[in-house]
Image 1 (tube, one colour):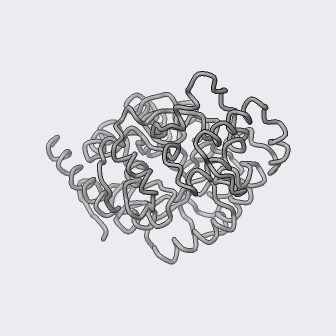
Image 2: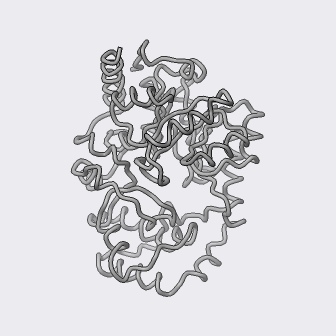
Length: 365
């Protein structure tokens, strides 16, 4: 059921065909569909999906949503390897790091089933990114978000096909580059946010990005720590015209999260959402578990840069989840994790966000 709100509906909603200016980022297609059906803009995080999987997923969203707004997010960082060269990367992995991962496997009894994880099924490479983008260009996706990087070879063709380009930025210099490349909407993502995130806090960042975007007539969406209607009202006060939310959906049944991981989220506070480079080599905010403790412990090697860390730990991470090795199971999550303490649904989350935003805005007059 779509939620509507005269207090929240604005030009961004009109431009995208949404009822409320809430972007919902999730790795679950079911959750993304539910977000769009609830009145927001569901964004499917597809970076770790193959081109074939993207084609199937986008078709599923198109069939389920029709004219409702929805989108897809890709991470295309600079300095990626040119091709999917896993064997070359494996050969370059330091023995110290290999030994550390082997010790983790032995200590926690993680079976080696010979299967890769999401991070190691393929190497984040220029070839793979171009193959993913080719599928998106030929699809019905109208909103393409770029989580890291705003390459002109993506933005130019996408704009020619009438797609709305959303660039996530963590510093003013990133905003300048994204605007120059041709972004239509900027998401100012503060360090409070889950997953890959930068060092600047949301309250410090958003007004800076708004000031830059205003001179180009571009809208800004606030991300990082957004969990309630009070945060939405605050985002409006900072000059943003909408919000980007990720952590909230982890608590939703449509996310299909493992119960062991959901339990950790329910118990977590803001201080339990910490930054680690142990998953990908880039700063990634996630809930603290034995996984982060081990990588922060005495004698642990420094994580490698992406994609070397991906390949170093990717198979192990997949096996941890498949075999339910509870101490090491984890998920990216932002500091807004403290605002949720139970399993819920996407419709309930959106309804609460809208209702509490209206209360907050009415209180402010």
